[in-house]
Length: 570
Image (tube, rainbow, N blue to C red; front, side, top):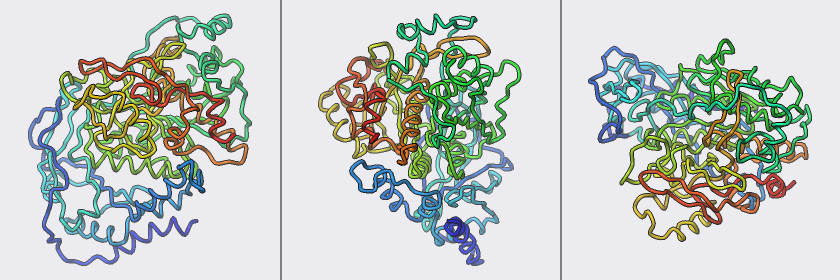
């Protein structure tokens, strides 16, 4: 196994040792461009020549087709190698760029006196720091300063860049270049309902009045989620991502568990992994609503399964990805990453990031899922507009971010019996095509839709969400007080916790974890509660409607633990 790890590094060393001293003379070709900055960004002028840019290059995988084929075999329920996930070293062997790729790119950079460093175990991402003046020459670009008018956040970007024609097949993306994004979107502020601690009597009431507030007891009843403490030797695990300086507070978690999971040991908590200068401060009133929500509705549901809070700080290494790529690369570098990983943050819309950068990010997620990790994302809270405040009346519905097919996108439901929550971002991607594993279910919905909204959505795009869970009036504790929150960011950790519990049973039985979920989800519609009411308005329309089978409001439906257990082979 160590020999395979070393092979990627040796490819890099071999390639860089073969460099000639010839000056790069290949004709440049435009690699990526956009006609203008996105709506909401203003051009302020040229970037200073001496400003340092932290650039990253995604190199072509040596055998991406082989990795895709291996993942398809492992994730297809009809495959004889179903759930035979790859080892870390196997994934890195597929992902490592060829000697030719490394040599060609390194020679190009060396001709500008640039030395790069690999930043992933496979060596498919490299980094280097150069001034704007050099970047403009290297990429035949015009780096400028742009201002995000809503937030006042400025960034250095270019509307186009070129690379030598001989490198087109070797380089997937250079960034940050043509991707524009404002601040990450979290959830709405907490709605205070009580500063008092809840009594056992209230908890009993909550189990039967789940239209008033959603608690762990509600979810356990509604979805038949088990409540028994798992073994201390469990091999299951779950992680949540944190951005934007959000802190998960241990005291608030203890209060939450005392109120809503008094059956769990008082020592039940989570571990923290800090990246990019994150701190997860526990001093003062610094608890984050989103961070507390994610931790409380994983730790509070998984019955003792180890939970990890992956905290990405402000000094991100991935430019326009604002920490998203860092979070995945951090997990790829680990020998045993969490087997379920939930993220409840996102950009306004899919087109905030360039196609090439989005695809590169998605390919990193593919590497992680090939190792048996389930990656989930909140789909967004703006209905067919994706994010609240996006102006799209009379325009095509803007897809959410991300729509990567290797991600399981989670929408929201509300009430009991459940209906689709109007806030759910649901629709069809413009970046990724419809996936084979969802074609039958999605095409059945499109046929029922007929000419409704014709021209406003991409009927051939990857459809989302994939599943759903409760996302309205969810009760959490922040700074010692209880309150209600809403959003698909509630739904993603809830659904992810169900997967972690199923993984615990599978691993205990000597089976493999669920891993890449989507092919299995669409192959087992009976494993989910089909939601047939509700819609997701936006862009001046009533949005899509929930319907029998898959729909863009609730996906394939909400969890039915007993049925999912059977579908998983337990």
